[in-house]
Image (cartoon, rainbow, N blue to C red; front, side, top):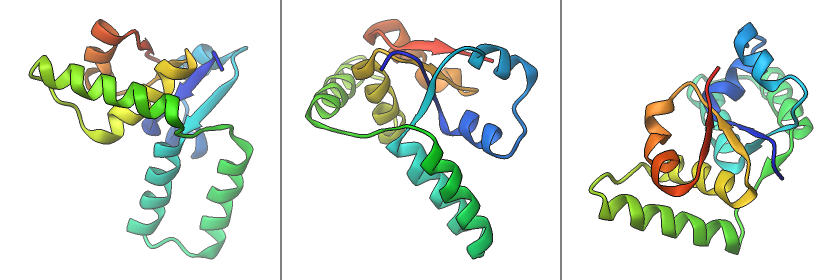
Length: 133
């Protein structure tokens, strides 16, 4: 894919129309996508907040306009490698963060996140490219 993958925090800002100018500068001229993990987390966000049908429809419409990186055998293999590597380093990472990183590494895409600390180990040891607004 090569491009930019939005972590859930960045995707939610873009969806809500609250993307800062720095974020928009990073995205300028780039194609962007989200992962299947972000899709799930955005739907969870709507469920926790008890959104009604109109707001859910708006969210679903937005998600349907954004390319989604899904898991496949290649991504699952990268996820396993990242998970094992993090455990060996004594720094196991949350499964969702590891899936996001695996999608990015497998597709050679950079990750735009406001939670850099959650992904720094993957950048340092596993080839994840991080962008920060």
